[in-house]
Amino acid sequence: MAKQPQLSVVIPFLDEAESLPELYTWIVRVLDDALLSFELIFIDDGSTDNSWALVQELVAKDKRVHGIRFLRNYGKSQALHAGFLHCAGEVVCTMDADLQDSPEELPDLYHLIMDGDYDMISGWKKKRYDSVLFKNIPSKIFNWAARKVSDINLHDFNCGLKAYRFDVVKTIEVYGEMHRYIPVLAKQAGFNRIGEKIVQHQARKYGNSKFGPDRFVKGFLDLLTLWFLYRFGRRPMYFFGLIGSIMLLLGFGFSIYLGIDKIFVNPAGRLIAERPQFFVALTTMILGSQFFLAGFIGEIILRNRDHKMRYKIKETIGQNSNANM
Image (cartoon, rainbow, N blue to C red):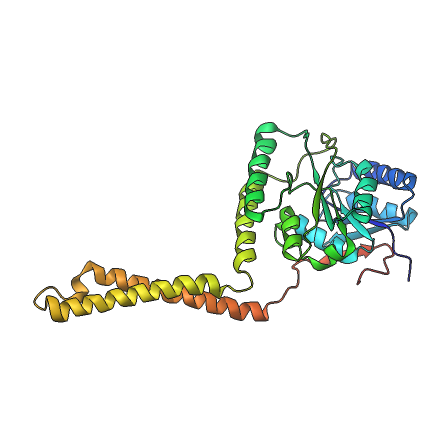
């Protein structure tokens, strides 16, 4: 078995043909100067330009480079998941391929993990070169909400530049659009030593951002999902079953009251079915039953769920004997 590299750099990309050669040269120069053994894993998330051809050229000339190509565009979370499955380094760093993340940060991130008491280091783009109205302000609001919900004191949850211990990336499962919340996933998995480092951020040199305004809506919805899963993901009956039981008891109790009122208090009055209170009680019982059943079905699904990720790899190139570790 080949010796485990000190550092794995996982780089998902989509249509970044202009950036890839410059990014590769920059990373190699920095890591060679730092005397770190490394591997570069490029994940092509369904590019339509000649990005994959460039990766093939890099793999042919440098055995430290590996490539994974998706059959189509699946999203950044799935790309990171595939990279995490194939990486083998003692420390795993992720970064974007658009040259906005600086490879100069990689040696420091490596040493913070290896020499410090951290499971994960998240980058903080304190000074950003993005649109203030469409990126900076929404990002601040988004990060504030993420801190409140997760109780993790980070300033930039969505920074692509992060570093992890090997065990972390082999334990967490990044799915859906959850790449924004990897620190939260790590904490939920038991890796509580999460730090932060101010990193350089640069203006985009080539092309345009691949993420539209809808990412903020999706981000907040994913945050609510993550909060719910954190609180009730292992026992959905605690949430749905509790609400359902309370509603059933209230509806049943109100029905009994209506029956007693009709029989003993006001027998000459309107029929129970003609009173609005009857329909309130009936609706409450029906909704309570549905909530209870939702919790019960959730418990069954939880015990039989399939964790397989939903993406299809078209091609993998480069030697990686530790891919299945």
